[in-house]
Image (tube, rainbow, N blue to C red; front, top):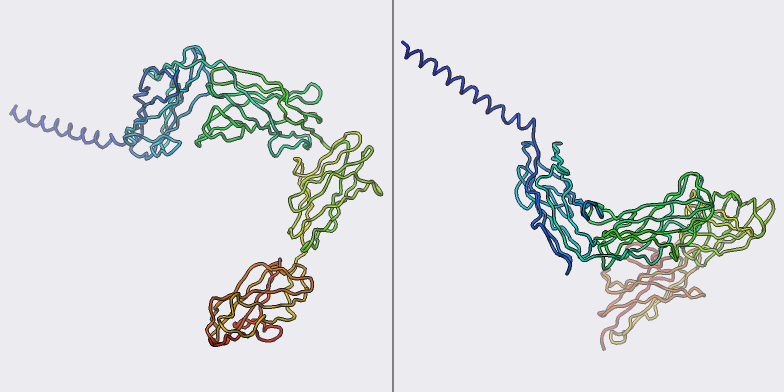
Length: 535
């Protein structure tokens, strides 16, 4: 009886244990999916120390990322490396991006999958650095999967610490710069409505041989005691190149081209702004302040307070420049002018003007000619600069950073087609051996189009209507309206042939004569050529 009870208890325990095991087996995946974890391991350099006094080299940085998620399919993150001189951080932080779906410049895994992926990156250790001992340290590592699970380690939480000691050639020379220039779209005169304006400066920084460029500051000296200081740093764009200001620098820290925007804040005074100083610092901590000569032109910022112009207009706004350059007139009114007024017009390449001293007309009106070039379809005025004898300056148009001017002149349209008055073949018959250079169609045109006739084609057809030769290209019509159109062919068996021709204008309007597909008949009758039998 007792034995029976023992067996019964054993069966109950076995059943309970199996149920518990089944519940655990069922719940475990759900628990893992609900609480996935990312972890890092093996964060280390391939060596603890390196000597680059005879030349730069690379040292491999390794790390492994694990993710317990059962639903994630991708993972990405970054490793951050900082160089130190003693305990002082020096130079920029290098961000190394990695991803399971890596592709340059993102590092892909050297082995593994989402559950455990390993990575390797060759860190550049330059030949030159500060005189004091240098270490490269991993300061932070972060990773996120496509389900939102994320993990970050930084500082002392990275254990053991990933540290590389480097012995480098001492760099004691600061970066150098040859000159500073104005970068487009900045002009030597700029408009500011009072809300502020951005000036752009370009310059080239050199630090070879050396540790490479790091950062700097550009100082602008404005009217009165106004000064604008703009710091900038060479940074990684994340797309395989670096940025200095807004200029792309393709992978070179020793020859750096910078395109630096400098914002003059709202309410900045008008007048002259010039480069006062440029400070440059390299990755070894060497700094030099350059004060000149930097050659950057002075920028005159104006709110158009002294010379106030308005009513800009072009007359006419449509011109016939099909065959020659023609003028249009730019008119406006201006007040506040002291002495002579000089105007400079900036237009697109389709038209031109010159600095002109203007004569004041009735009610403060001014007029100056603008030449629209031959064949150009339109001309747009992009900027107008006005100066007077007192040195006052006003600028108008997008060229100077102001509102765009609605000043555009267009070419009058031409839809007329060429008209041929007469046409005749240079020869109407010949034996095959007598035709060395083909024949020609001598045409007289009625010059009724605005656009000149400048193109042609000819085709010679056999009796079955198949083309057996011809020519095409540009053509020049003589002053009396005559033009000769060549017709080339290799051989013409004995028989009768018909020639058709086309004329086109610079407006792309064409007329056709003598073609077998129903085009206009040749003006003087069919152009028929007979190839005689061989003798």
